[in-house]
Image 1 (tube, rainbow, N blue to C red):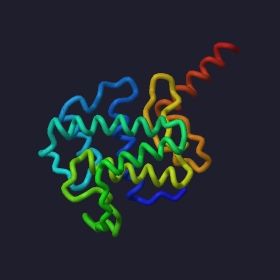
Image 2 (tube, rainbow, N blue to C red):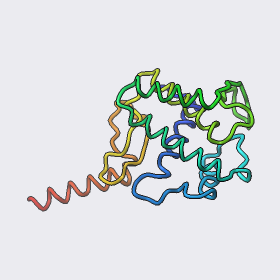
Image 3 (tube, rainbow, N blue to C red):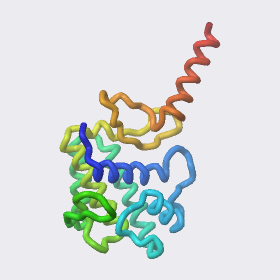
Image 4 (cartoon, helix red, strand yellow):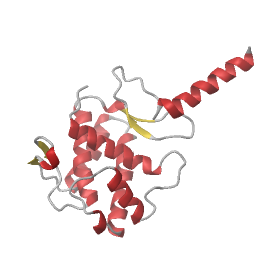
Amino acid sequence: MLINHDTRCALDHVVGLLNTAAGGSPDALADVAGLRAYVAAHDISDVRIDALGERDLKAVRELRESFADIFAAPSDRAAAERINALVAAAGTTPQLTDHDGHDWHVHYFAPGASVADHLAADCGMALAFIVVAGERRRLRRCAAPGCGRAFVDLSRNRSRRYCSNRTCGNRLHVAAYRARQRQS
């Protein structure tokens, strides 16, 4: 599956946002400082970090729940309905841009949009492209017990099961090996 740079970045934003409250860790969006850290870490364009406040925090936390609902949707139709509502509410305004040395690409958020509307529009469209491509099953949660972190399975055969093979995958494989050794 070919995913362009902008769609990949938007999907990374979705996963990053979902993972601010996953894996049994404390909520990384517990306060405005956490929201500012998230926006800075993900280098979200056209958002003034110093202007983010409590209203933005509340809206982004609600958006995170909307993304979780899309990941958990029981069917493509249900996901599409949720994505359509999300993108419509964000006031999507497609615009061509070539900022910061990047080639021409499309931003779906209106200039001056709030951080929540910005993410809802760009990320909602990225999720829409996944549904249109018939690849919604690539939107996954980690299969490791107690983890639950989100990820997008970009493996060729759609076989990835863990958020990270270095952490969750390796931990489960080592546990299975040790269990086999004890049985021997």
